[in-house]
Length: 358
Image (cartoon, rainbow, N blue to C red; front, side, top):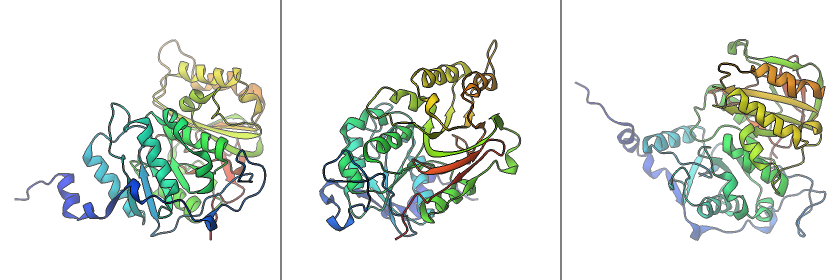
C-alpha cells in the first residue's frame, strides 16, 4: 500500500528547502558605478540623463529575486509549489526578507514590502525580480520607493494584476521598461513560458496573435492598423492611479487592458472614468485582453455594447480577446516599448527588443 504524502513533505524530500535563500538586508550593496545605465535624453534626476531604460536580458542560471508587493500567498504548500515552478525555469531563486509576511490581505507592512523591492534592485547579486502574486497593495507602497535608485540599477521586473501599479509608476518616475506577465504563482503554461523567455531572455520581438485553440472569444471593435508605445495592465488598478503623480502620459499609446471578476457595469464605469480623465482621447490603439468572469447579468448592457459606446467613437484600431489576462495563458507584454497592431487580425507586433543582450 502506498502511503499519501502532502506537498510540503514532498518538497522537503526533494531537498529544495536549501535551494532558496532569504535575502537579508545586511548584504545589500549599491550597484557598482560601472553598471550605470547607458541611456540618453532628459531625466527628472540631476545625475541621470535618459529617455528610457532597458534592463539586461535574463539568462539561464541568473538569480531571480522573489518579492510580495501586494497580497500574500496564504497556503504554505502553494508557496513551496511556486518555488519549484520558478526553479524549473532555470533560475536561482532568492527570497525577499518579508516575502512570507502577512498582514491581513497584505503581504506585510507597506514599508517592509517596499524595502524588499528596493533591496532587490540595489543588490548586485540579483539579476531580475519576479512578483509572487497580485491582489492588492502596490499603490500603498509607491511613496516608499526610491525611483532614482531604481533607475540607477535597472533590472527585469515581471508580474501582472495589482503589479500594474508598479509598472506604470516605474515608467512614469524612472522610465524603466518592465514586463506585464506571469507572477510566481502563475500556472506557467507552455504558452506563458514561451513568451516570457522570448521577450525577457531572448530579447525577441514576437507577434502576439489569437491562438487557434482559443476558439472565437475575440472581437474587432474598430478595424485598422497603428503603432505606438505599449502601456496598460489591469483596468481596475489603472483607474486607481488616475489623478496621482504616478499616472503616466498615455499620449500616442496602445492601451492594453485586462480584468477579472468585474460586472459589466463596473467595466462601463471604469471606461467612463478613463474617458472623463482624458486618457482615451490620447490613444492610438486599444486592446482589451480578457475580462474573465465579467458577468453581464439581468438588465445589463453587453461587454460589446460597452466597447461600442466608449471605444468605437475614438475611431482608433481596437480589438478584444488578446491573451493578456488572469487565465492560464498570459502573454508577457513589455511596458513602454514601441509596437504595431492590427485590429482585424487581433495582433500586436513588438517593433524593438525590450531588453539588452550583453
